[in-house]
Image (cartoon, rainbow, N blue to C red):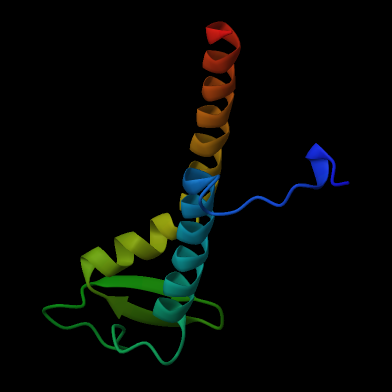
Length: 101
């Protein structure tokens, strides 16, 4: 007989948590691709479109468009912000459920 703690959660039961988890993984892979050497969105010399330099290890500068550079900058802290929002949302939801009883 399965206990309550061994119950497996599904996407239908936890859509917000599952969506946030998926969003964090997508953010990781997109930011990893943008920073990889296969990214077509970076150039090694500045031009009219690629104006923002990002300095990498080894003394290499690559230039990105402003929106891509902004995304690379915030992609580092975005999973932490999503995690904090999810924790606060879960805490508030639990608080509201306890008050409603």
